[in-house]
Image 1: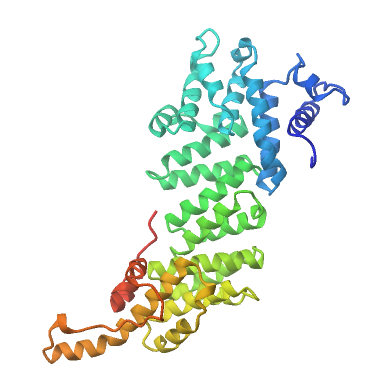
Image 2: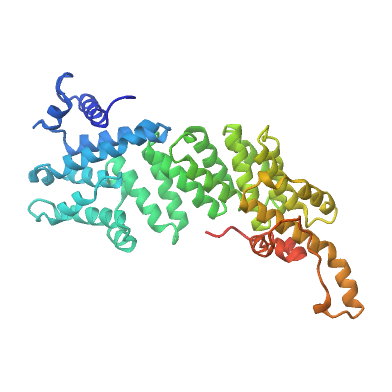
Length: 418
């Protein structure tokens, strides 16, 4: 559909939907404006299927579909709002309107339905409408109260998957196991769709929070194989990096090979960036072995990229400064870095690592001087800092585990905060 105007994209999809359902479609030569004004308008079910056709293309990486979605939503908003009142006597049309709003449509249609009397909208449909409206408006408690007793399996497949996705989001903080179960249902109910993509993206985070590393690696690999080109893949990679920093590969070394195998589904540049992101986060969490392993994998992929090479060298060296055997080499590596290749956040990390290395080197001397009776306030720690480097105080706060030097090694079980 490249090169088509947004209205024409929408009408093309509408005609395709009608043909797929075996209904009569207007002649191909009917103009866009004429079709938009046609009295034989598609039903709510057809309208929402049109939207889902486009959204499923977003899941596999179509930027055209992503750009076209806004125009299509505008057309469909008008269509839904202008449907005859009698349309809403039918339950399947009510459910189509709910599905439309949960897919990004204007919630005004649901407010309109709630304003219709019981003679039009059945009372049995009102909890579904009220719950969906509360959810899209961010009223979580009201949404949960309205939808708690609703069984997604009792709904049509697509709406059932949408509702399970909603319920999973509403209960994840209180009942992660149930949320995981609902996300499993979404994936089984709507394979190959944007709903499955969203379920996988969220479920990776849920199972990593619960410590289910086997399922985490399985789901992450599945996502990377099938949806790595999704418009939302960047969000997934952030979640993946966050999940990776939950694993202390120093304690679970067998997990590292699985993580490497999982990441092999990515292109080398994306893999490198993810290793770097996870290595940096692991340093801040005090998982020094994890940081070193991740940084070394990144080093294998830097190629001619000077900034990535500097970052991987920085993270590896920073992870080694608490090791008595490796501190000298780590400090030499830190000193050799070209500061012009590092971003501000990494410069602060570099200064912090050098400052902490200086403190660690002085610890034996301090201990011996204290043993000889020197007053603590007279003991000065020499902080190694390159000329022109900023004061390390703020950077030291970022290195939570390293800021206590030797004690950091006893706190590697600290998990990333939500």
